Length: 193
Image (cartoon, rainbow, N blue to C red; front, side, top):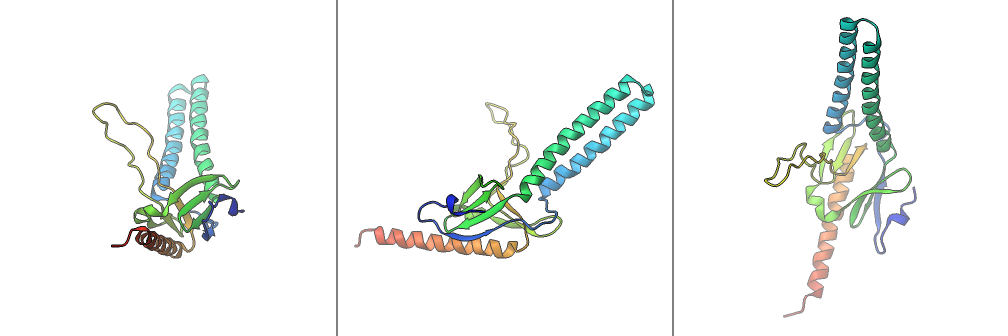
């Protein structure tokens, strides 16, 4: 992956990497996978119930088609997410953290100014994940003016890292160095007494 095109003038590469080649899910994604399995079980139950009530006929075929279509749509959504994750590439510069798609498209960037919000969590299935901020709640209470039903958004993350602890420590160290640099620059720019 060619990282140089993503760097801004004066920005320097500190680290780059990719997920390890194994199963990794965040808790939220594991819940989504569990709901997909539950969805499949309910679809099978629906088909068996309809077949038991109506025998084999057009109603049963319709139930099978509806259950199958629903499962295909949910499975496709999960597979799309899954395949995107394995194509990711992660980049740490001296001022931000980038998540890049397989084709080189920038998916997300997070400033090191927000490093105090970053956290390290274990990935289900092994490895660890660096979460670059706060996840939005699954449901937002309605305001007095409108009902807020936007879907919950996960914070950008560096998922499935074999050396997540080291990457997290490097991000913290880089953020602290950047803060010291900004503080020193501000002190030099301030007029003397």
